[in-house]
Amino acid sequence: PEYANVVDPESGGIVIVPAANIPVGSVVSVRTGDKVPADGVVVEGTSSVDESSLTGEARPVEKRAGDDVSGGSINVGLCQLVVKTTATVGDSTLSRLIQLVEEAQANTSETEKLVDAFARKYTPVVLTMSLFICTVPWFFGAETGRYWMLNGLIIMVVACPCALTISTPVTYSAGLAAAAQRGIIIKGGSKLEALGNVETVLFDKTGTITTGRFALSHLDLIGNLKSRKELLELLAIIEAPSSHPLSACLVSAAREEGVVVPPGVALREHTILKGEGVSAYVDDEKVYVGNDRLFNRLDMYNISLQQIELAEKW
Image (cartoon, rainbow, N blue to C red; front, side, top):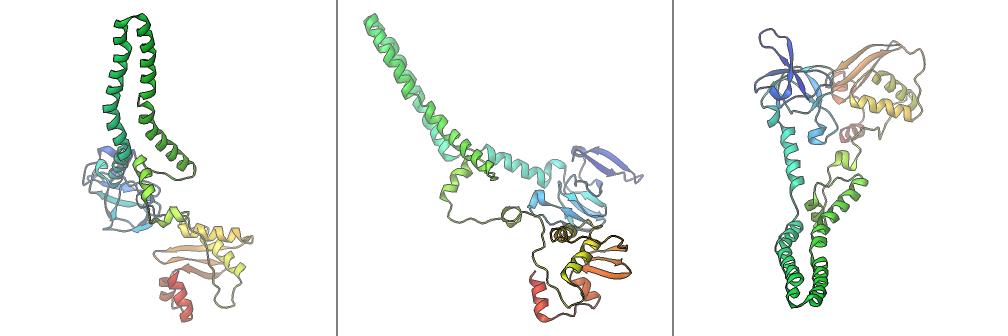
């Protein structure tokens, strides 16, 4: 971020200062939706942080007092974080990552280096030979001079290594542009050239093979109390007010299956259970949505061993 909210150690108030001027050891306030200005340690608050710009992982990571946070990550939770910086903005993880990318893009491939080295030695030879052919024959007469002048220019044009020198970067540029049009970003010609020798490819799953967005892939009904449609209606009602990424996924899944929330449904006492899920009253019926820790705590995890194994697998 360009600016940061620094906590004044004397008054406890917030002072907005340029992020580049934050010294090590400053205490900054990172509100919901704000970026962490520099690497640091959480000293107060519990919230979810989006680190996808650094790790590529779309799922926010919960941070609490004592946890490390990286500059450039975003507070996407419901509470503010108070962070004590351990590095300046220029020394943050994100800044070092940007520097490494710029250095990688500036590196030329071995083929380019070879062509450039050849051209540095070959070009003076061609120019010297062409100059000799264009000038010396004039001492033997005008007719001879004109004849060899033409041949000298032809040799200069044909033998000049311009096409050889330009061909490599032009080829790389065409390959990089073609890949970019298909959504593939290759950082430099050397990486493009190295692909020709690749035998095994290891993919980063999130955002590469997957889209980086949560989706409901399987819904297993336990018991006969609710139909699939009724269950999706409850999920849509109780998850709509929540800001958690999984909540948006469940609401979207209900919408895609054509489930419409009935009008007049009363939702009250919507409560976020940290690290477990949410609870609320829907038309005077208490509803819980969460993980296995929540239902173990409520002593409601009474399902078959096969269903437990399936839940743990997911």
